[in-house]
Image 1 (cartoon, helix red, strand yellow):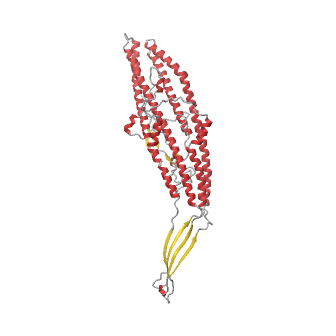
Image 2 (spheres, one colour):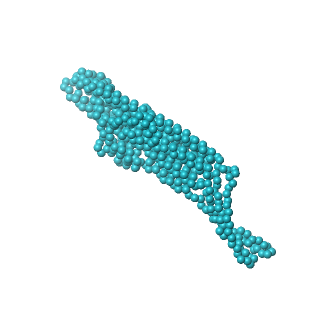
Image 3 (cartoon, one colour):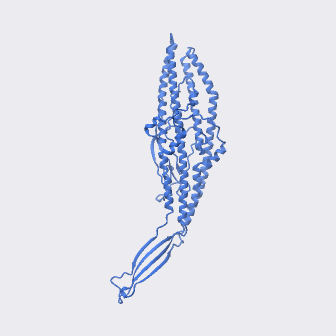
Length: 513
């Protein structure tokens, strides 16, 4: 029996990281620096946060990158969610079958099963990670509100010329004075407006980042759903294999006048039946693991997990997608991570305007509506008056030169990050399109050549073995060859189906069903 793959792996929950165009350092905050709310950064494991937190947990995860699968990571600022539990099918020593049943590939599952569209819709509505990260938008709205708030005015009351004792002709002074002062800050450089623009651009960028997290969570649904279909197909095929071998074994035992050759064949086939049953147990376990992975993504109750059954064919015969150049243009136009990076460039420009507005401090308008001078110690009437004045800083030394230069450098950096992301997206689409073409060619080759010839050979060898003209060892070799071809066919169908959905993810559109 094949050993189960390693299960313990870290599952990274998606979160929003460093916002493109933000003024947070890419390499992480400097020691002792105090980050602001909008530029809060955390580069632990490559993630900066805007109101978010890194959350990690342990969940079983299987599978490895397939040949041709892109290993490009997403733009800095988004923690790409790792694949959820995706158990690999277990095939112990070749899956035994008596015939290569190509029609099993077209089994669409039970009519009441879960379709891919239903799974995506359920994930969008119920996935806890998506629901949690959507709160980032609410927090960004709160940041916009905070950025637009005005500075509060100040009110100050005092009393001056209070004597130690009392004033007199011999000790003249005063008179005692009572003041009520109101100081109102005037934003002459429109810092509040510039700050609000930055907050709104940050909110738009976070929204695009959220859309990109959704895009990649849909990719997780793609993978989990195809894994569920694949493991179900393996389980059905293993069940058919056990059933066919048991029927063949029963037919051999019913032969009249068995000889030594027949006895050897019975012993050999009985051993093969036991191996088939062991393989069936592995495929059942893999299918249950796949149900668990998809149910976790869809936030289904634990009691409903065993009821998850896929509905839909693994083989979708649809027209090929557009040429690579058109796919790359679509990706650059539609991918939300590219859109977020472009918004980041605009936000970086808004940051420059904000830092320039910060060169001039608020001007404080001082207004004293009433000043009371107490002349009663001199037997005279109390006098009242008012005052007005301005207080402002002289921008001689600090004109915010450092922050302006940093913001200008950030514009250049963000533009370079956008160019880098665009190149990576183009490369990712090219790799996905290449994998789609290669998997389709491999599927056509095995369907048109290998599968037909192997089916005919296995039928002939089965007839010879049943008639007693072929030894059990020779028939076992043919059986193993047929099992390898059948498994290769199923793997190629699954590979092409994954390639179709990977192309959707790379482009950012549902081009293929």
